[in-house]
Image 1 (tube, helix red, strand yellow):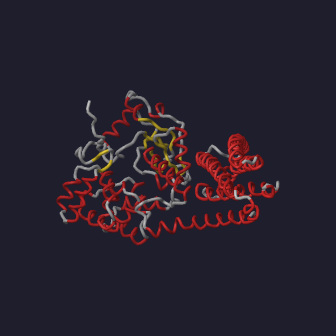
Image 2 (cartoon, one colour):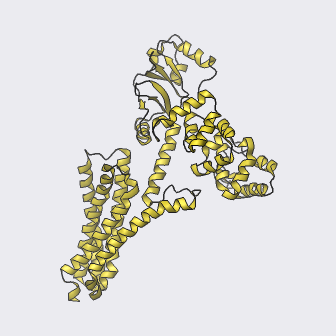
Image 3 (tube, one colour):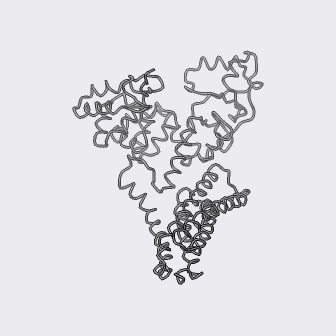
Length: 471
């Protein structure tokens, strides 16, 4: 059997097979588009992108350079639709919006679900927001303006207003007739919300239950009364945890009075989980948003802050080394071995810190089990430290012909790895207690602790036992 090329088309298999390879746009296809843009051949550009799925059009816009992007966007015309705009990352979306006028942007935003529309409009300047909102229909404008009153990253910003809500005294037959006859219903939904006269949710009905029930059955008898109601001001991280914990497909969002104001669907939560995971990884490295389309100066400003902090912690480690300059001069082996102790401690601390930050993010680490978590990490650190200490002790003693030096590095390694385990838990916990994102600053301070204590423990112990004077 011959190997088939790994070519995957979009969800509807709309694009020709030679356009995508491995789920990505082919390089030769991108080159053809760029050639057409350079030649100002808008007809050719539209011909090339016409079969693409909106997500692939968004990829194309993000891939091309900034100098070519504006011309490509202007040539796309109606092909630059709402679905494509929604798929763009924030930095590129801002560039595209600058090319579009307020009226065109308003027409695009009107076609989107409320949550996607809010995601676009909330990043605009105040005057741009007013221009776009003024060009929108009154009903759409009111919904977006209401969403913008809620805190950023809250359920109120993320929820959709298009949902199905019915009274509990209806029958299944009435519900089915309503769904068939109502023209302006939500396009996609999995659940039907049941409300009381005050529009407070009292239950939910899955579509499968409706389809399998006789028309005479009352909604009140069919609905599930247990619900996971989402407060409109709930943070998106807590929202994502609730969906994950209870395997929700959708959930009702309620205001302070308990009235139904919107719904959150699992597709929105998938985006939240993905974004939060990416953010945490980038924050660990102090790399900002990590978007290759982010302006250079903005990236420099973000990264330089943590590099300056790291520079300060590195100087602190150097000062510790300077305290033992005389010992290092007498025994050069100390200079050779001390990076090993600090490096092992740094790696051990990073491992523990990653576990602690994840546990905090997922709600596994709380005040109730903090002591157990700390005890567990001390045990892990002690066992790892003893294992590495034996290896280093033997190798050092054989290489430098010094049992004393081997014992010193072994003890220093055990001590530093235990300290690393403690720092890996306590630093994120401390950051979290101070309302600072543990993923942002923990790594710098954990590394500082392991470096300083590694140098101090190894060089201090060697000096205290007079190891340098024995050589």
